[in-house]
Length: 71
Image (tube, rainbow, N blue to C red):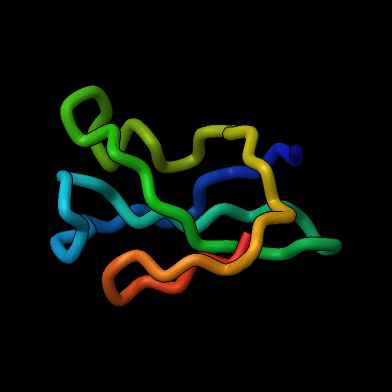
């Protein structure tokens, strides 16, 4: 598990359930990774931007719609 900071947030209209695309900066070793979050009902994009989050980063790549997630 690694801590990273959300640097970019966009709507994710291709997702089956309402979600955001997130770009999370984990520092120079891991760099920036993309993820998605189904938190549209609870958080705005502005709320998420700049937040510190904890993620598992050693999963195999996963295709979600047009977004290929590499953790």
